[in-house]
Image (cartoon, protein in one colour):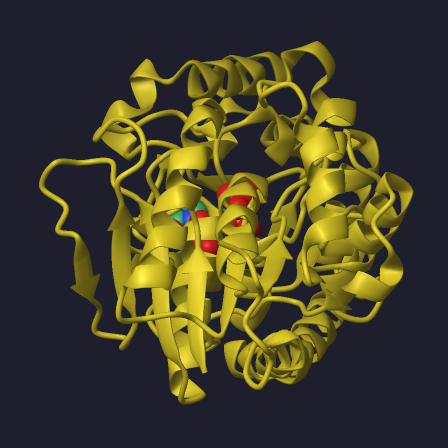
Length: 405
Ligand code: UDP
């Protein structure tokens, strides 16, 4: 099949650890590669945000990235992109109607891509599949007045869920959230994303560490909802352990980062500053050695639409203590592949981490079961196979073209 993937702000060419480039870039890049592996012809459409970007570029993984001229040719914060989605959608429609490549299905990532894709799909008869990645209703509940999404996001997300041919949900929690929003369950397909098991595996180089000191690792952007501050608050209950924090801007830019400074100050006031190491953002290729160097991974998010980092840790054979939210509640099976604790509860987190660090046998059992779960449930190949059958059921192949001008 010809598959278009639309990811307006998250280019698969920008995968990395810099602030703001999180899971969606990685998701789109690895999914596109896995779909090529299934024999599909894949193009990823992302907004052109630099004058040096070519119109389209092939990747070593076999898919093409097309840079869509919509809005200024420079980086624009994600939350300010909405006014350019009409132009994005019109450009897509023009290409798919008049160009030499019309997709059989278009898979939009994030709600703003959904708007542009639906616009183009309506005008060309291309069916639309949507993955939200995150939901405005959840962000609003968590962030309240600090929520920076454009007003109306929740309404758009509801309308999109009703209009798209299929909504791909990534975890059970998202199913409930969307049902409450008014999206019919019959439109949803639950297809968890995968984890890169070549990059993240139990064998391979290990970052240096002090063998006498237990190591906890937590990986994520330096933003409040990742709960890194809760991990630091939990540390006094975990004597001796060091906590390695990976994520945010690269190390040399950390001193200028307000959130990193707040974490340092918090560590000082909790009396654990000598046990907290902020490494800054690292290239993904370097993460495996850090995961493998840890005795356990903590994923303390207040909410996690999917959560790649706990899965990456599990794929490296590291047991996880996670919060019982979003995708983490699906990937970590409590008492079998890790421990789940309530979010925003440093006391419960500290107790779970201390208990698990004191029990080598249980850590080994969790790690073994976690690896098994990753291999069975979270491979990109499995995800691409499941999506292929979703695409086939909504595809235009064999469907009459719509009578739209
Ligand atoms: N990541 C990275 N370098 C870092 C920190 C994170 O490459 O220093 C990657 C990490 O491997 C994962 C992604 O960024 O693939 C984060 O995805 P996740 O779903 O955990 O969180 P999001 O940022 O999407 O909220």
